[in-house]
Image 1 (cartoon, rainbow, N blue to C red):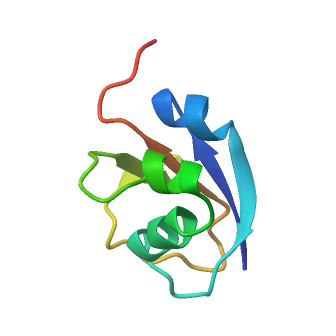
Image 2 (image 1 turned 90 degrees about the vertical axis):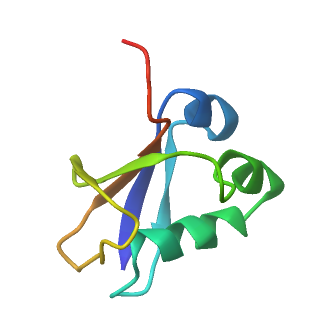
Amino acid sequence: MRVRVRYFASIREALGAGELIEVSPGSTVSRVRDQLTMSSTAHAAALVRGKALRCALNQVLCDESTVLTEEDSELAFFPPVTGG
């Protein structure tokens, strides 16, 4: 299934506004993050484990154990504190 991944604040500066990716149904947000970190060195640096990140699925805050379904269209990553 395809999901639009969006990036904000410092992650957006490193990776751009976002991208459309293919993920397996039933993937968790954590699995998608790991998939992204393997896609390039820039992704690995911006989304590295140990770096505090917040995530939102379809514009609703979620944690990394959240499972994506066919109905999900957007996953966002951003630092815990972002500017206006």
